[in-house]
Amino acid sequence: MEHNIVRLAGRLAGEPELRTLPSGDELCVCRISVARDKVRVLPSGRRSSSVDVVDLAAWSARSRRAMAGWRTGDEVEVEGALRRRFYRAGERTLSRVEVEVSTCRMVRRAATG
Image 1 (cartoon, helix red, strand yellow):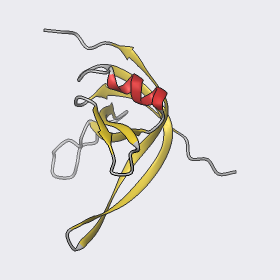
Image 2 (cartoon, rainbow, N blue to C red):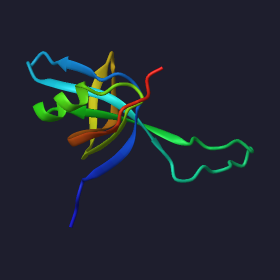
Image 3 (cartoon, helix red, strand yellow):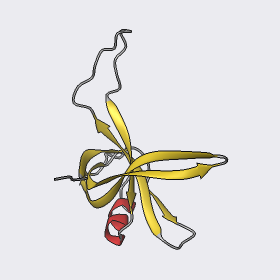
C-alpha cells in the first residue's frame, strides 16, 4: 500500500505569508527548520548540516488561520503530503518540493526578547 504522509516537528524559520493567487485561491506559506537526528562528519572534516529547512503550504481555511498566527521561532508540528511543484522562471522550468499541510498546531510559542 502506498502512502504520502509527512509528519514534521520543528521551529518556524520565518514569518508566515498569506497569498491570494490570480485565480482567487488563498494559501499561507512558511518554512520550518527541522533538526536532523545525526550530524555526519564529512571526509573534508567539516560537519554536515544539522537542520533541514522545509517549505510549507496551507490551502484549507483552518490550516491557513492556524499558520497565520505563528511567529518566527515557534515550535510547531505539521502533517500533510509531499508535493513537487513546477513553475516557469523566464525560459526555464523549475521545481521545488513542499509539504501541503493538512493539519498543524503550535507546540510552544517562541520566547520574546
